[in-house]
Structure formats: C-alpha cells, structure tokens
Amino acid sequence: MEIIVSVIQRAILQGTPLLFGATGEILTEKSGNLNLGIPGIMYIGAISGVVGGFFYQNSAARVQPVPAILIPLLCCLAGSLLTSLLYCFLTVTLKANQNVTGLAITTFGVGVGNFFGGSLIKIVKSDVPYLALVKIAKAYKTTLPFAKDMGPIGQLFFSYGFLVYLAVILAVAVSLFLSRSRAGLYLRAVGENPATADAAGINVTRYKYLATCIGGMIAGLGGLFYIMDYSNGIWSNNGFGDRGWLAIAIVIFATWKPTMAILGSYLFGALYILFNYLNVPMRLLPLIQMLPYLVTIIVLVAVSIRKKRENQPPASLGLSYFREER
Image 1 (cartoon, rainbow, N blue to C red):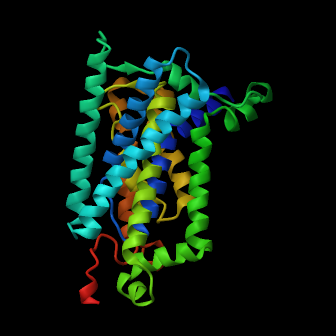
Image 2 (cartoon, rainbow, N blue to C red):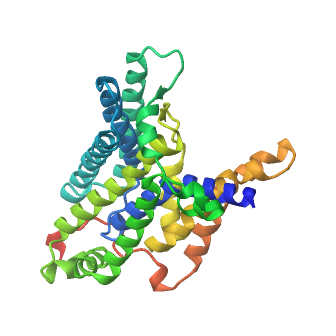
Image 3 (cartoon, rainbow, N blue to C red):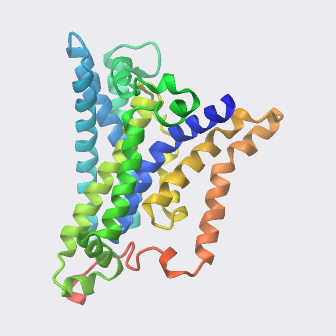
C-alpha cells in the first residue's frame, strides 16, 4: 500500500507542471493560436518567480509565508504575461508565422532564464551550480495540517502544496468556461472560423490576445511549481527538462479537453517516475525512461488516425487571420 501511495503522490507532483502547461495551451489553441513557445514561457515563469523570491529572501529580516508566496507568484505571472504579449504582437498583430515564432519564444525563454539564473548564482558566490530558495519553497510546500492524521487518504489527497490543487481547479474552470459560457462559445468560434466570428461582431484580435495571454500565465505557473514545490526551491540552469514539450503533447492526448488533460498529465507523470519502482537490469532502464516519449508518439499517431470532428483541433489553428480576405 505504501508503494502505491508513493507512486501516486510522485505522479501527481510530476504531472502538475504538465497540467498547468497543457491547460494554458488548450485555452490558447481554442483561439486558433498554436503557441509552441509554451516551454519558453514556463521557463520564464520559473525564473521570474525565482528572481522575485531571491530578492525578497535576501532583503527580509524574516521570511513571512504570505509575501513569500505572493511575490514569486506575481513575478511569475508578470514574466509569463509579457512573454505571451510578445508572442501575440508578433503573430496576431504582425501576422508572423506561428510555428517559427513559438520556437523562437522557446529559445528566447530558455536563454533569458539561464542568463538570469546564472547571474543570481554568481551574485551569491555559490560553490555549487545552483541557487537555493529553501525558505520560499517551504511556504509553497505547506500542506493541510490534518493530512498526517488521515492515513493513506490524507497522503493521497491532502498532502500537497496549494499549486497542485490550483492546477486542477484551473483545468476544471477552463473546461466550464469553454463549454458553458458565452465568452467561451465566442472564443471557440474565433478558433474555428475567425472570418465568420468577425462578421458576427466578435472582436477576433481581442479574444486571441486574451486567450493567449491568460493561457501563457497559466502555463507559467507550471514553471513556478516545478522550482518552488517539486524542486524544493532549487534553480539550476537547464534543469527544467522537456516538460514544456510534453505539456503540448498532452493537449493532443486530451483532444483539447482540459478535464482530460488532468488524467493525461498524471499518467505522463507516472511514466516519468516508473523506472524508480521497477526491478529491472540497469541496461534496460533507458528503455523504461523512454516510455513518456513512446506514449507521446503513439498518441499523436492515434489522434491523427481518428476522424471524429470533436477530437480534432480548431479548424483555424496555426493560421493567421487577415481581415481583408474575409
């Protein structure tokens, strides 16, 4: 029983950054914008939170839980927002190619993150190649006080920091917004056929900007969670891995449904840590570690084969809208 609980807990922690990224990208893609810059936005969200947390931790005589959470959180949202605005300006206003722009944003985000991360490490004159924000991370990892008294149930459901629950809440909220609200209907209309939406009086540019910026801010929280909660406040350059790309793959796995992204994120999280629990020869471990990527390929093939319209991406995904061609 303890092993099962441990696997589920670690899968949830591994899957939470993916869930933030997938939820943000689903909201973005519903507007017709294909933002391959999500990995870079998550990276900038992480380093923005680290910068805010670093200066607070080093300037405060005593680290208080509320500002320790709010300052990195607001910095993360601000950094993610600015990067998303840059993407929107290039793709929505200037009509630049979305694929190229997204890849450029990812490269830019990783470069900016490594530059500022490396600079902070040099400021503290650390003998190790990483930066530790242990006091800030403690606030993010605070769990519900009664979790320990509830046995396995408490461990499974109540033993996480607040960002884990926020990720699920946001996924459900985005799902309800897209399916139950008038604004969600307008957003889906923009993603399917922006010319028709424009003719119906819907402001296509506004919806694209809002969906992409809010989606980017949600994705940025995935980077913040990875550093402040999963990594215990430890920043190391290039330490985020490929989670941003897996988040984009989960969007396809979930067939653009945020609630399905919850399942997909935790499944991929379990595949990430599965090799730690299998008693196999060392030479086979690399094959086990390939499982998330193998599943990604299988999912992409399966979704491509399926022809159900409700499981397909928005019809105008990745296409710039030129109003004069309406």
